[in-house]
Structures are given as C-alpha cells and as structure tokens.
Length: 328
Image (cartoon, rainbow, N blue to C red; front, side, top):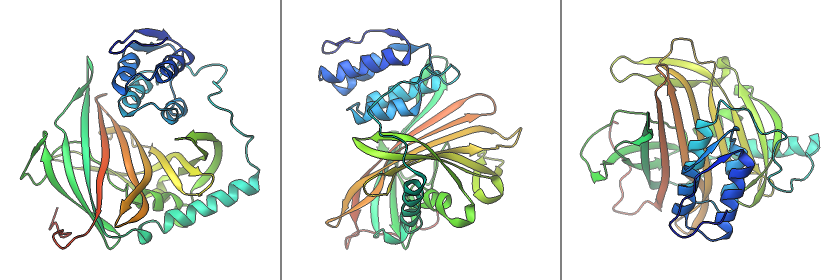
C-alpha cells in the first residue's frame, strides 16, 4: 500500500502486513506524520515485538511512527507471535562463543567506566506523559527538566510544566532515573552476577548489533520500585531485559529492561523501560549519551502510564551555567 499525501488507510492482519504498509510508505517518501497515521489506523491479529519496531526504525520510521508502533506493540502483547518468525533483514549466523564473550567483556568495560568518562554538562529532558483510557493513550501535561551532570552524578531541576515555564519544585506522576550510566553499571558490574545469553542480531539504525538477554535476581539487582505519592511503597526487585552492543565499537547503544519478580499486591504490577544512546557534541567532542527513553508502567488496578523522554540541548558548562540545583 502506498499512501497519498495526508491520507491514512486502515489495515488489519498480521505483522507482515503491517511491515509492508510501513515499508511502502517509507519508499513513497511519506512524512513521519503520514506513516504514523497509517499505523494508528491499523490493527493486529499477531503480537508485534521490539525486533520489528527497531528494524522499521532503522529503515527510516520517524519518532511519531515509532510511537504508534509501540502503541500497537502494547495492544498486541497478549496475542500469539507470527509463525514462522519474520526474516526482517539478512542477518549473519550467530557468532561463536569466543566472539560473544569478547563482545560482552568490551561492553562491560564501557558500561562500568561510562560515567567516569563523561564531562560535566547540562541538558534538557522533554517528557511527554500519557495515561491509558478507554479511547487509548490520553496525553497529560508535558514536563521539562534541566539536568546537570557533575562529578559522575546527575541533578534535576523542573523548568517546564504543561508547555509553560514553571516555578514548581516537583510534579506528581511516573518518573525514572539511571539513564546516565546508573542502569548500565548495575547490569554490568560484577557484583550483580548478571546472567547473559545470546539472543539475536539487530540492525539498529543501520548498524549490525549484538543483542544479549540478561537477568539479575532480586538479591543482587538493587533495583528499586517506588510507588505512592502520599504513602510510599518500596520494593527491591530483580531485573531482566536486553542489551544491544554495536558490533564495530562494542559500545552499548540500547538497553531494554523491566522489573522481574514484583511482589504480589505491590501497587506497580509491571515496569518496562527502553533507553537509546547516540552521539552528542559537548565542547567540540563527541560522547555517547541518552537520546530517547520510553517508560511504561502497569499498575495493580490495571491502569497504564507511559513517558516518552527526548534528551536535547547537550552543552558544556559556561561561566553563566550553574550546576548546584539545591535540594530536589
């Protein structure tokens, strides 16, 4: 199906049909908004997985289309996977054990020294927030944070709420932390006793990438879930997910992780986070830094919440910049 400008044609069926719809639209040079509308008008009879989304993103699907694909992924999560699995790209054979071990060791060195190799900088986090309703995802007030990274730790200051500057000190709602190296260190530090297994190849943004699954048990994860605005409910849980290691640079370019073993009765039933890393210029040097993250929460009452964060305006400290945000 090739879309005319400004059109959106409903399509239903399997994942292969959806992939063809997006690929045809990209080939026809439809805009990101047009592709997103076509995806939004589609429905699925099979489960859509992250591997399909990442491949379509590598082929040119823009941020709006990716968000709509992620929406379909959530809606189709209870369906059966395509059988047989789709062949999305010409993947090489699985690497031998020695190559996998060497790649993981290089990735470990990168991850455990990540924050130590970062300069002091400022950046902006633009957070779009959604809550699930009968009509689908409903937008909530967006939030903007200024982030200061200094001495290997981060501080945040709220600077925008609802699209306007704000003097608020905080906002209620779903949030996350650890994108600037905390989670990478947790996954790769020896103390976590992380179990890694070969998963598959990925063509991530046009680059061949090793994908390893990982799992950390609750005893070693030190992964904290915090729920409740008035009465805090806290629980340390395990962690599982995927790490994407660039075949050429052996750096982590994406991490996908979720809570494992959430206690029964805890207000949060499930948590899923994806963080993408890309190069940003700071003071004339390139550093691999968070570019986008997507956080999804399923509450015990079956309500769902979603944050999509874009990291922007990376910059070095200037004489006017201040890193001391005070107590947050």
